[in-house]
Image (cartoon, rainbow, N blue to C red; front, side):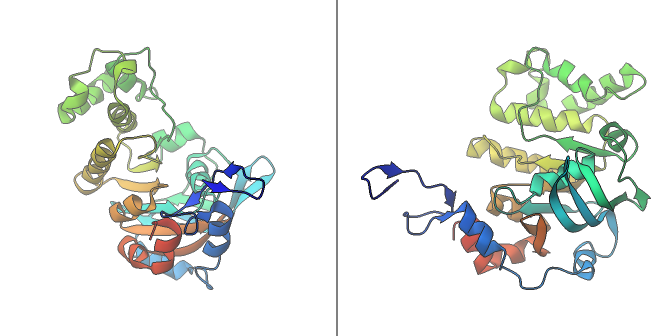
Length: 290
């Protein structure tokens, strides 16, 4: 808290840690982040970070909501089995990238491809069923008055035979004993970490290849945050899932991810390996509390 010239206290909102002299406001972060890289990453840079073998590719994407444009000439490449984290100040357009991939935005120009197939104009159901892309929302999206098992069955709502959804749910229960113990209980009794596990598990029912994960740590206690990232690590390294993540906890997101992109004002300002961005002093000062 800081005292203004009328003797009242103001709440300071921003990034970083320490006393009020070291905390940057969101506007300051946005302004300074815009100068992080004088030269925006090239298409060749994106390709190199994806080992020149991208599974999902975004090219020159301009998108937004209605007539409001949020993304400007966005490029992205991620290979199969790779993890990519988008960081940046609030309002930078990070979640809008995920929304655009999944079909929730107005795409004004540009393209999105999976394994060479154009999927730009497909709707969310087609993205899940045909392109094998699943979206894990940042908001609490469980059905509280359904059992844990019924919530998992809902993940297979696009399957022609409900029995297939039940079979997929059984496999998930075999994998995650914490959910199996709650199988017949209403989802409302789950802890925050268990709810997030259920949300992730429900997205796995359709056996997607690409997981879009929006703020996996939001609202969770530290012990549950570690659990969620352990689950995502297992899905990437043991099941070969490709993960594109938005994470406000930039340090945690970059520690987890193979590749990181820094977004500012709807554009990609920087792109590099996750550990290199972690070591960058300006990225650290603006986003990692260093």
